[in-house]
Length: 389
Image (cartoon, rainbow, N blue to C red; front, side, top):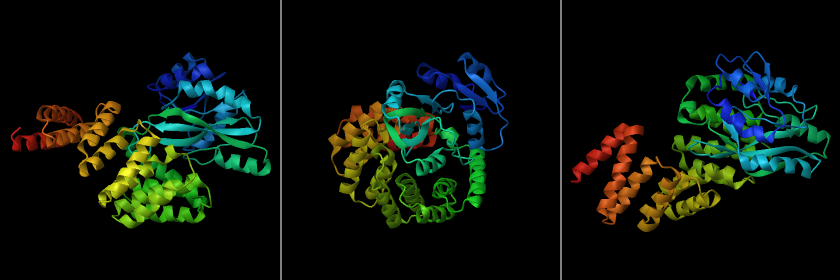
């Protein structure tokens, strides 16, 4: 681990990993809180490294202190799931030629793409090193090793291995973090102008920062050099879908979302594209296609509340009220503070004449909106008053 001022979250992370690992190596990059003291409580080996705006350099510094045969990399805003922790050791012993085991990470709070695949579990090898100052990863060095030593293979651990809560609204809204990421990636891009991965990450960041034209140009450039690496091609197409939607270019958005879901990667990693494509089909009144896409979403991940909500919205438009109610209720069961689900549940119940249940749903929606979006709470309250409720 590399850490800095993570006193609030570090213990939870280390508690999740401690039962399954032989040693904990922590490199602190300048904490001024209790981070180091907390790490010491877990008998971690603590080292210090001056921060120089380079995540890869810090991670490589940490690697030199590893004494085991395999390395699991975690950040303080992550937790190792108990199920994955119990599966790791048997998996390491299955194939002596496995160099890396990719892990599925669940992005808690991510509005669109709830899963990602990360190369965080790898064998100690003298040539494995992190590259890229931002979004540091070992993939570049692993590809070079396998090119030279083709006996090595890359495996995947099925199921969610890491829970990541770094995509909450506060983290995403941190403008300084976005600006620092942009500057770091721009410097890297200047030295590596044909790198499709940085084109994907920086292009997506431009789109997030409302620099849509810059983002589209960079994402399209990435596609020209992406070759056949499916994971990067997916990201490029997916973010082009988002960018063209922002630019109100629906035909291009549809094309890129379709290209994204055709990439041969894990279905769970494509939930964002399926979901967004469904929303576009709904927006263009192709309700049957939207319904099928949202059905696919909830089949891939029955616990994705947004998928159930979106399916409910389409079913409501199609007049299938009973089915819509079932999916709104499922969304609420999965996410208790889902104000929009309560609100639309109230609408459908009112259409069916179930006034008491409808008003109860509206009351829940207003209470939640009051905490999350007070103006929407007032709008809903006034609308009900205007209707005589």
